[in-house]
Image 1 (cartoon, helix red, strand yellow):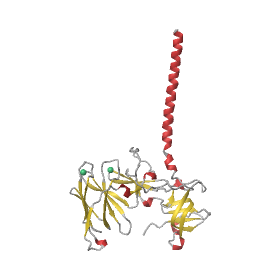
Image 2 (cartoon, rainbow, N blue to C red; image 1 turned 90 degrees about the vertical axis):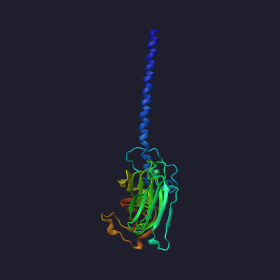
Image 3 (tube, rainbow, N blue to C red; image 1 turned 60 degrees about the vertical axis):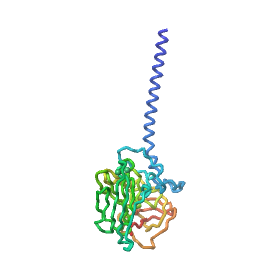
Image 4 (cartoon, rainbow, N blue to C red; image 1 turned 90 degrees about the horizontal axis):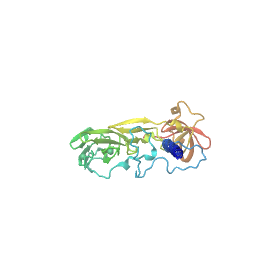
Length: 324
Ligand SMILES: [Ca+2]
Ligand SMILES: [Ca+2]
């Protein structure tokens, strides 16, 4: 009887140990597979392996729709490479609020002085904060003021456009974005934060930049905007009132295929030159209108200049006009 009892005890023990081992194994396995999940997102942006691969460009790259389902799970304090799918144009992050704007319309458009008034809770204490601004072109008497605290600014071509924006949903602050059309068609948004004690500038970025609503921004100048899938060269992260820049490894896209759309300059060249810029010409005749052309990236000089191979085997410099 005792012997039998001992035996069954041993069996229970053995079964117990096996169960624990299986549980541990499952745990380790799920941790590994969780870790392995991450690069899947990146894969979408690494270009196409073969030119004859099915071309689906609809969900790749950047969305211009409302940021309805932004993933808010990544709260870790570590620097993560942005996933372009989380990025939307800046306007999508404006609050639905309209400032009172007045100006003397007897003045020329480029000389107008805008007086702006509004109120919004900027520091998240539940009380509205009084916001005023005077925006005068190329004049340092321009300023923005919150609850009597003033910061002077120097807009080139203000248009009176000013918005409430949430640069980072992870903190309680909302920022004020002041639009400046720039010295010659290089529009920017200047951001200001009121933290309950102080009002200060928290940087500026081009109007067409993208952001993820969690402090990360990608300038349109750092994006391969004519390619699908798109990729970025660098991004900025807003933290503690400052922008830090991080570069992204684009070498990984060399040898990959992308769909090209848009007007680009193309100069036929058999090999990628060391000094590509010597071959750059702004001749109208070198402009080509590319429509869904499957190109292969052979060299990347910057976000607006590449060495590529066209589907017919022709190789050359591909570059885009970015100035004005
Ligand atoms: Ca407040
Ligand atoms: Ca915020």
